Image 1 (cartoon, rainbow, N blue to C red):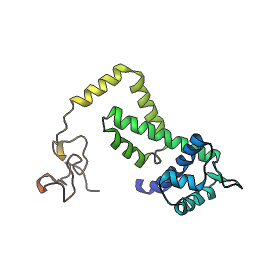
Image 2 (image 1 turned 180 degrees about the vertical axis):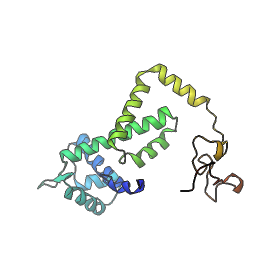
Image 3 (image 1 turned 60 degrees about the vertical axis):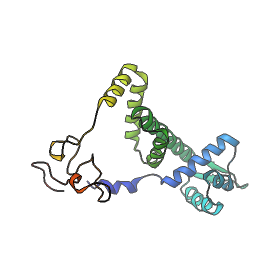
Image 4 (image 1 turned 135 degrees about the horizontal axis):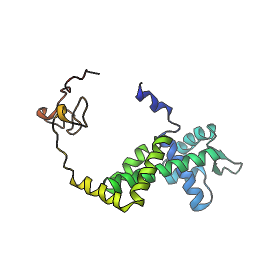
Length: 191
């Protein structure tokens, strides 16, 4: 299966997700949203906002009335809500569970919030519910994460690596040649 081809199956782009969430936030905060409000909220030009919103209107995710006030369609509102929930869960996972600094967790969550499948969202929700609702499980996980000291055992002996080392950076500019390894695991064939 060519997994990379499924990227094009996404319901919405990163930019479009932010437009939906901006409209949603403006409607909640001030009760209305116009193109100019969305542009200010996202710190883009009114022209850019207008072009992006046109696509969302064509997809029936956003409506605009005769007075030029924007609304989210039921589908647009549901999508904005899903994306916001994804972001909240991803920030929680990255920051509270994996101890990624909050600012980095928010940036990384923003990058992928619109890409999660319904299946992944549900499993993430269940996982976070377990961690949040069961102090013993949460404590056990945190102790285990703090206890682990990751060292590279070499590709041949690593449970995580497949064909290339995931521990060391394999970028030519960042890792010394001695740390770069493309050694194959014994018995594996090249892809």
